[in-house]
Length: 336
Image (cartoon, rainbow, N blue to C red; front, side, top):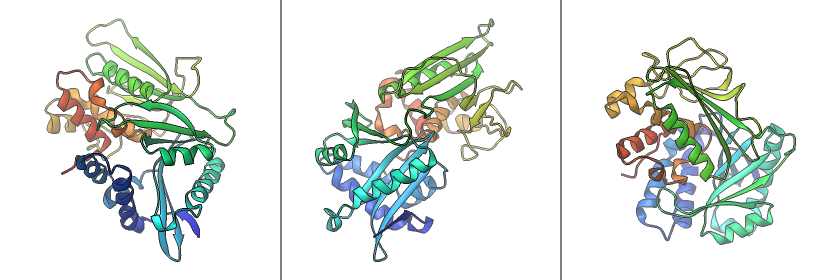
């Protein structure tokens, strides 16, 4: 039995296993749920996801046959497991236990301090199995995008006490660009998922055209200082030269062409990307750039929009377009 990271050309056989786990876990749910999940994890979608630096895909191989896999997302030393599965004929042999142990060892070497999963809450057998491996129950999400209950479970690994647990997102823009709406919606999503969240909004003296910035911090623990001095992620909705130190990009070239710049992100390397044209051409108004950005941020930090019912967090006005813009930024696929 060999455990290793998957190769790019193995997305097709892994996808077949992924469809099997979806059919097995969600057997009691409407067919549309299974079709939507499969649409978002096709072989092509999986290959696209694996091109991003946060994605990790492992396989277990037995006599040149892939018998199990694990797919997850690593952001700021927290690893979120999306899918884990073993073929039925290989169950009862400790395959998943060995796979999780292997992945945990590698994650600790990378400095990771937490593994987590958001699971189908009715999957009691696997929940009990995970508890024996040291996973603890977190929040219970009573209704996700499909009206299904989801259970969060987690396990602290490595040197938890020394780990930097706060994730810091800085959003900068002008009045009327939806900075407040974006930051409140993102904060609400993070709070629903069980995080401690702080949000600090700062305005200048001009009311209609003045600048606005949001400091959003989320953590496993109580947040002592709500002000950000260096962000993990910086989102800029203005064309000004004003800059703020940040570590990471969220919006990339896949959103749209770099010019004209309207909503942009700048890293330490000074890279800019814009996506105003997408909001106008696809959604008819530049006002939707904030929701496109929200979808991309959620994807970047490893929060699957299917975990929650985002409709409950959006205002009735322009609900469907706002939701569509979030899905576009996340690269979500509706079932056909």
